[in-house]
Length: 304
Figure 1 (cartoon, rainbow, N blue to C red):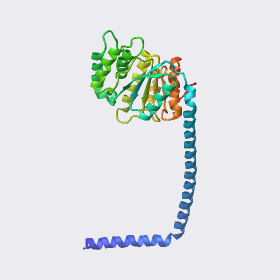
Figure 2: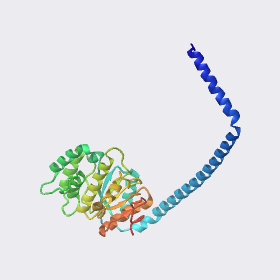
Figure 3: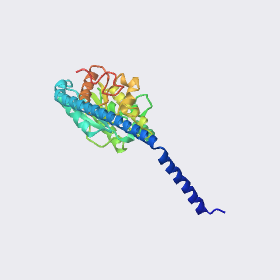
Figure 4: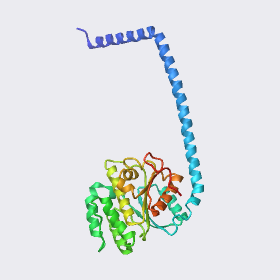
């Protein structure tokens, strides 16, 4: 009977013999294969060099466009928001975008009436019922919530009803925002004053199982504020126009974009100027889709 050790040694010998045979008998084939691989590698290296050069060129062009926007933009927007009070709403933005756009609104002659910072809890489906119940309790006497059942519209009606339009009520706003803050739906902050326009600043695409639903809440919130004030613009960074970005969800709903202006590249100088011009066009009762995404059907920027 053949032992296990003998069997293993025999198999090893067979494999060694096969390997030696391949090495001895395929020298020509190996040379041809090596040559083909070398040629293919050179071709890929050439393609990489070309793509890298194109990428660097595009990056340089983007930097030049931003520099141009930074230099010329303030002159282009000077006075376009003269005397207008702007309510700033934030939902997961990059702080640098908020600072930059706020400064440009001031250069355009507008003033920031205050900030409402939405937390992630607003878009959490698990807390939707709590938010609806809280909204009904916080509703000021004599005020009405929109007929829509979604939380974005309800909270938009609650906040907008106290801060926008002829029915703005500072005392009601203090109660509403205080209640939303205590429940974790709005970050604590100073009391905003009455406003004419609304600028909602977001980040890029949202992530997670409920990302699309969370983005829809902010998009509908914006739409409700647009109905209550003189207009609203919704802006975000690259990725915000994706399927799980707030801008992307808004653009997928004609009922929202017929009234709300959207910008999808607020991280750039051009996008930040576009955010201010989008508020201007809202005063003119126009709305558009601007930026660099495929859904930016109205171009890079509104008309100055």
